[in-house]
Image (cartoon, rainbow, N blue to C red):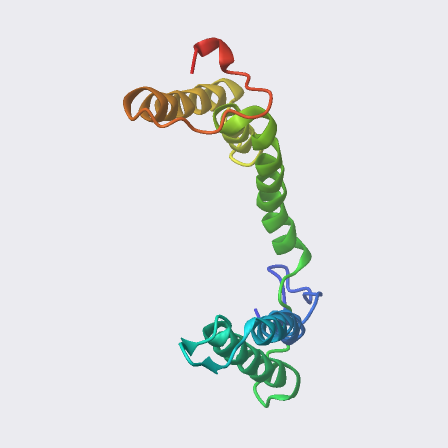
Length: 173
């Protein structure tokens, strides 16, 4: 099986790795340029007291920009640029099956808090992706979060974020 074929021998389609490398290099180059410009605005030179407040960020931005320009050159014009498919549809679907629920979890934490959002996340992750039974998934999710609740709230006396709705208010914590 060649690198640009899937397990069935069909050719993989998608964006080439060097194009993705170039896109990331462009983003890093933009970040580097912003750092350079803002560092110059802050004062990137040497003052009578020593380096200005933008001195070190300026050099970091310059190093980042030079590195990004090198990556961009290699990705687009280099002799050894990688033109193989970066990710095919199957691989992208696998990544998204984890990334999208994780993103939703982060959004839900602000409403429900860490404990309840984590319990829901763990249970759904086990049911949908792990193919575990619903009862086992719910038990594990509740056990994990009860353990964390007792560890942080009761034993260490370190309150974790409860969320805007504070659904665990009835517990007195």
